[in-house]
Length: 350
Image (cartoon, rainbow, N blue to C red; front, top):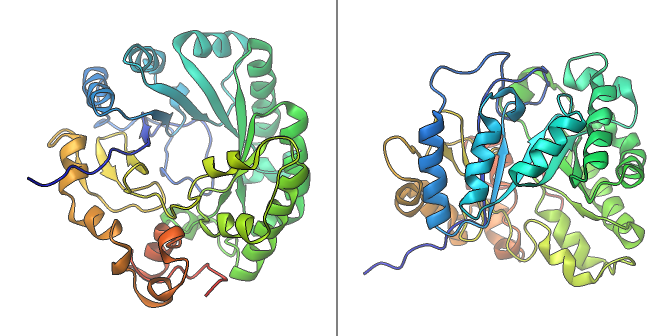
């Protein structure tokens, strides 16, 4: 009998492609309308039943903009009733105090609000709407007033490198419980609309070292999706945070585990139409939950089988001494080379 693969710790479910903004980098390739093939409420509940029975610990609901889906809070309430810890990724512009209270009452434990610059014009140009920064910050303040914990999600790109210190400061001063800096990866929309915005490996090294040093004095935890190398810097510098135990850093994605896409106790993404991909940054279709259960897809996918075997990594990633605790970003490797087990071209350690 073949042993079952441990379930993912985190499942991300994009409940709709509809969004009220036009962000240049959107990993979901969102639109201003809902796709006709999105999972129905009953299909979403069936998926949630599978996740709950599978003992998934964390469900991230995002989009598009999840608040654009009319039955979004019903999905949240159902997931909460099944014992799932629910967090939400939002652009923040549709959140007022009343909505924030409803989100908290429905069972949402935390909302991540996207803030992509310390200055309104930086954020607005990236998010595709003048005034988006002001609306997002109003959403932040609404969460604070409603007692709904929130964190900042911030994209790291060439045009924001100089603003990173002020972006972190803004997160802290606004009352965020964490700061996530997303290393921009060249998914299809990024290739079309964010030309020359992705960091080169030397810029990436510089900002990851700066963030690691900032963590010493920073009162909230800093996480960096899309860059497993960040945790290597934390260890290399022996970062000892002043405001919380150093052991908390092991909660940072990738710490001692490397790229989490499709990994046991790692991460998997479900798109609005039920397609399953290893990670929002690694957009390879594994199956569809309408045709096969998420558990069967997880167990039977050949792509996931390859991802989970670090010995399969090619080139410098395969030879690196950090192979098993880093493995590079598989999404970046795939988007740049077309091969999801190729060397991560954004790594400065190799």
